[in-house]
Each structure stands twice: as C-alpha cells, then as structure tokens.
Length: 353
Ligand SMILES: C[S@@+](CC[C@H](N)C(=O)[O-])C[C@H]1O[C@@H](n2cnc3c(N)ncnc32)[C@H](O)[C@@H]1O
Image (cartoon, rainbow, N blue to C red; front, side, top):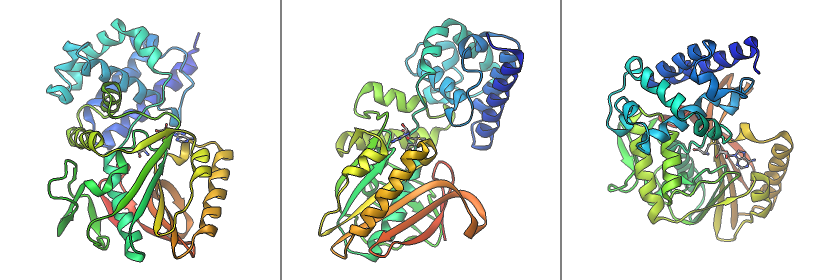
C-alpha cells in the first residue's frame, strides 16, 4: 500500500508532466493530467491504475505512459465517449468536459491500463529529422557522398529516411517537392549548405525495444504516444509511416553498445552514426562502451572511409554557457567537433548557428 507521502510525490510528478505538456503545446493533456494528479490525491480511479508506480519519476515518464494507454483505447474505438474530445480522431479538445469520460475510462479499463504502464513510452519524433537532415548536409559539404546512415535508439526507425522528406524555411526548402513528410518552418538561422540530392546507400538502426512501423500494432503504438491534440505531429507521423512502408530500414533489437561493436567503416563512403534523445536512457557502463567505440571508429577513419557522429541530445555545455538540445557533429579523420545548432525538444524548429 502506498503511503500518503508517496501519493503526494506521485501527484507532483504528474503535475510536472502536466506543466511540460502545457509548455510544449498540449492544453488537452495539460488539463487532463492536472485532474489526474487531483484524482490521485483523492484516491480516485487514477490511484487504482497507477498503484505500485508511486515512486516512479523522471525519465520513466509515468504520466506519458498512462496518456499513451488511454490514447490507444481511443484510437481502437474502445472509448467512444472520450473520443469526442480527442482531435486525433476528429474530436474537439476540451479538458474540462473530457475529464468525466477520461475518469470513466480509467475505471472501466483499469487492468489493461495498469498492465501497459510496464512498457516505456515509445515516441519516435519525426520532427527531429530536421536536425538530422541539416547535419547530414554539413557532412556531405565536407566530403563527397555516398552516405551509410545508422541510428542508435532508433525506436521505429522513422528518422532513417531523411533523404525522402522536405524541410521548409523562410527562404525556401530542401528535399523532394512531393515528399509525404513536410517539416514546415523547420529551420532558422544559417541554413545548412545545399548539396543536391543526398545519396544514402545503406540505412539501419537499433533499439532495445524496436517498433515495426509496417504493422498495425506498431502504427497504433506510435500514434498512441503522440499527444492527441497535436495535429501537425500526427500529420508528420502519418507521412513517416507511409514512407516506412516504401523505403526499408531495419531496426535491430540490440543495445547501442552491441550495435556499435558490429559497426564497420566502408571505403568509398562516409559512415554516419546518429542519435536523438536516447543518451539519457543508457546505463553509465554502456555510455562508456559507446564513447570508447566511437573513438575507435574515429581512429580507423581515413579520407577514403570517413566517419561522422551526429547527435541531437539535451546537453549542458560549459563552452556555450547553456543547456539545450544541441545538434553536434564530430567528423573523422580529424575528430573535429562542431556545435551546428540547437533544436526544440521535438526537433522543430532547428536553429542553425
Ligand atoms: C525518447 S525515445 C527516442 C527515439 C528516437 N531516437 C527519436 O528521437 O524519435 C528513446 C529510445 O531509446 C531507446 N533505448 C533506451 N535504451 C537503449 C539502449 N541501451 N540501447 C538502444 N536503445 C535504447 C528506447 O527504447 C527508445 O526507443
């Protein structure tokens, strides 16, 4: 049995997530999570669903797991009353009026929702490809194509197809005009150098919990973790799922460290290893192994077989006196590191330095 103190801590965590949703443009989730926090303290149905998780905090993102589980029920048409308030299925967002229906769903699907809390949220954010694509253009500006693209913590691998999407910015756009994913107003600042079409000759990723975006279950899972009132994100996801069905990119079930251990450079190509918002989930020991392997690959790189490490991760950088989602490129031979820009947490917009 949870103590009152633990429930208060649990409610505080949910309130922090509500504030984050408000800040990141989801008034529906902000309003619902505020009410979930109150319901926890009142020992309502939210407390029944979240029982056993009172001490979860931080990266475990308990509140987002719950919201993902409920959204999935809405998408599966198992919560028609609540669906009226979910824009992802044509409803009109109104947290106050949605709350009684949300609370009913917590009661009627308690066991199913509680079981789903064991799985970490799987958000594969397509907007982050804006940072990746810009970083790749910097890579090919310095050396000729083709590129072999690899991603660790790739989730469903939706961001492994940057050559098939379009980014627009005030002075123009890059990418195919008929791309199914358009990252509108994706860039600001010093726009990356344009190098014509990207030539990506191999692409693959790894994840400890990969999602297959070509299956109904995988598509539902990915959609359920997008906040239901954020229609542009849902639209980007729809486009990326369409791309995933036609441009293959395997995501292997592997840790980042194991994936990198098997990664090799290839003459006549530049091998690019990319990752976004996954570093915080690695155990310290794995972080050390990954860092060591990156240095090793860097030492192996030659003018013929180049290597680049591109990342978009929240970082505190003493050299820039700040904390942000920095887009950082390190390329070998040489190993020079450049901070290319900063991105919003979901990638859009990316501001280039
Ligand atoms: C917040 S998601 C980000 C997914 C994707 N990179 C993006 O930006 O959309 C973090 C991902 O890291 C994966 N992950 C966590 N620990 C990992 C590890 N040790 N090795 C590989 N992937 C890991 C999770 O399964 C999850 O898919």
